[in-house]
Structures are given as structure tokens and as C-alpha cells.
Amino acid sequence: MSRLGEISAQEQMIRQQIIDRGIHDQRVIAALRSVPRDKFFLPDARDFAFADRAAPIGHGQTISQPYMVALMTARLDVQSTHKVLEIGTGSGYHTAILAKLARQVYTVERLKPLLDEAWEKLMSLDIRNVRYRFGDGTAGWPEAAPFDRILIGAGAPRIPQDLLQHQLIDGGIAVLPVGPEEEQMLIEVRRSGDRLDSTDVCPCRFVKLIGQEGWAAGKE
Image 1 (cartoon, one colour):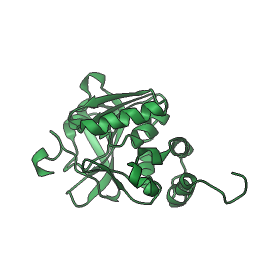
Image 2 (cartoon, one colour):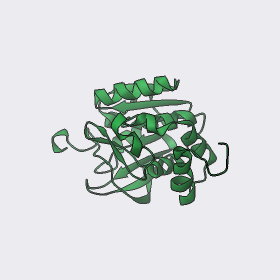
Image 3 (cartoon, helix red, strand yellow):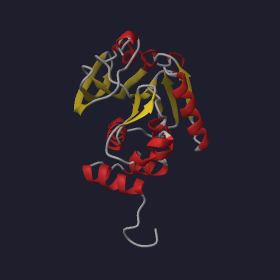
């Protein structure tokens, strides 16, 4: 920047959509600054990369609005020693943000073309602390469990009890949208032994979580 006021579209997005809305976690903000959001958009949609809304990425899926990515990440409270499970790789943008914060990210996507594209994008950004799996995200990644944190980037009809009880560490945090398909509630879940304590964060709307502990594939 040569003069005050000459800031990038990405920096303007971070200041106006993230910081001005009350997210001040410096590690989250630094991660957002370090990942070029426009790289995760289809070529003909890159003009909308920094807009305050979700956007299509193909295959009936979307990339979440910047504020929602920041909010979910802040609520997840990822530390540099953490192993994180992400369900719903999507574009790979949120995967990249998590990878900047965590020791290791395990990401699962049920749509192979999206998973392949996300892998290519993260490789091009030299992000190497991510492992990728094609399959039902609600089944998690049992052989790598337990995880310190779990992020679910699609709307579940109910809290996926089996996944969180068996693959989230005691004291761990999960952040996910839960509710009917037209509008969900973003919730934070903390596991305390056999108990899952949930806190409502805000209303939201995500694509459906398809899988054993989600919606049936035929109902998309």
C-alpha cells in the first residue's frame, strides 16, 4: 500500500465484514489475511469473492460468506497443537484457514470433484498439514480419532451424537449448523464425558449434510 486508503479488496472485506462485526481474534484474522479467498472461486465468479454472502462453487455446493467462516473459526478456538476434523471440504477455503491455525487438519468430502479441486488449490498454496478423504463425512475419520476440534460445514438435521461422542476428545469443541433445511442454528458443542452441551450462536443457512448422521442422499 502506497497511501492510506489503498487497501486490497480482501483487506477491506476483513475490516468491514469481520472486525467491524466484532471478531477480534488476532490468530483468526491473520489466517484470513494469509489465504487468498478469490483463489477458491470459479473463474467467472471471482468478482464476487469478497462479497458479504455465500457463493456457488459448483456441484450444488457453496462457499460460506466471509463472516460465517470467521465466526465458526473463532468459536472453534483452534490452537497450534490441535488436530482438527473438518466435515465438508467444499472449496477448500475453510480447510486452508484451519490449516493455518492447527497442527493437522483431516478433511472429508463426499463429492470427489470438489475434493480434487480443493487438494490442488491447497497444494498450490503450499499448505501441507492437511489430509484428505473422499466419503461420508458423518462417519468422520475413526482411525485418526479422537480430534481436539470438529467443524461441520453443512446443515445437520440434528446433532450427530455418534460422531461427537466417539471422535471428539473429552473437553473438545465442535461447531456446526443444525436444523431444518431452510434455516438452521449455528451451535457450539462441548463434550463433557457422555454429555454434549450445546450453545446457540446465531441463525444460519447451509447446504445439507448428507450421510449416515445427516440427511438421506435422495432428499437433496
